[in-house]
Amino acid sequence: MSASASETIRVSEIFGPTIQGEGALIGQPTVFVRTGGCDYRCSWCDSLHAVDSRFRADWRPMTTAEILARVRALSGDAPLMVSLSGGNPAIQPLGPLIRQGQAKGYRFALETQGSVSRDWFSDLDMLVLSPKPPSSAMTTDWDALGDCVKAAASKPRIALKFVIFDEADFAYAREVAARFPYLPVYLQPGNHTPPGPEDMDACIDTEGILGRMGWLIDRVIAERWFAAHVLPQLHVLIWGNKRGV
Ligand SMILES: C[S@@+](CC[C@H](N)C(=O)[O-])C[C@H]1O[C@@H](n2cnc3c(N)ncnc32)[C@H](O)[C@@H]1O
Ligand SMILES: Nc1nc2[nH]cc(C(=O)O)c2c(=O)[nH]1
Ligand code: SF4
Ligand SMILES: [Mg+2]
Image 1 (cartoon, rainbow, N blue to C red):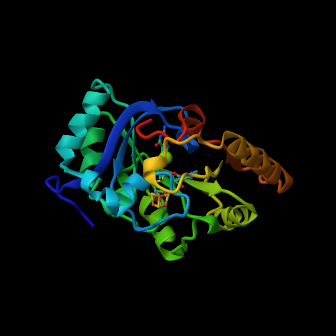
Image 2: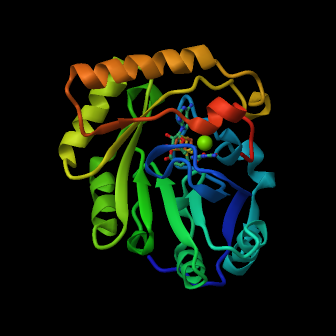
């Protein structure tokens, strides 16, 4: 599907530069463009303010030019990595933003659950596919996930990233990884989030997160899954569930 540059994109928030706190690009200075709206409702979603339609009034329709101007202002016009997240950014017309941003030297990563594929995935610098394990209560559409990998196969780096709370989630990650044996895998312990986005500033369960991190490392080693990377959500350990960091 193609999109014209005049189409608007539903934006929940644009923030940064901060560091990418997760996965393959962890530690990299990054500006986040978080789009509003998602076709999933994960039981533990940490970004409900970009998912729950109660927050729809906060999502602003922005043109590609407006988003790019905001990203350039936040970064002082110095090109850096832009992470397109959400919500599900794949349901927004982001192709023109990626191409116009790249023309200015910016690089683009996109985080999605793999439920919707777009031909413009091939223009990305990095596609992070984060299929949802049983604890999310979502069901994987294997054809859609395969289509996402195919759409991106010609150019960008692709990585799989899994949130793991328990043994069933770990088994799911193993299954997906076996279907795509050539893709790098990142595993991150789940963070038990408060029930509503209003309460997100509540304290995080650091002990629980680090406990699951230790368990995850033990499981990876026990299975001799030596191709997997195990990482915490670094930004959560530093700033908790705060928005805009
Ligand atoms: C908020 S999502 C937005 C992008 C897209 N909808 C997705 O899920 O990939 C960004 C990343 O945060 C992860 N995430 C969401 N809630 C989490 C939680 N409670 N603990 C750990 N990671 C979480 C998701 O799995 C995903 O990898
Ligand atoms: N610092 C930081 N790193 C992140 N990595 C993935 C994020 C997301 O919510 O998509 C995120 C986020 O919100 N903040
Ligand atoms: S797919 Fe991503 S944004 Fe949507 S509900 Fe799940 S974690 Fe949240
Ligand atoms: Mg997040």
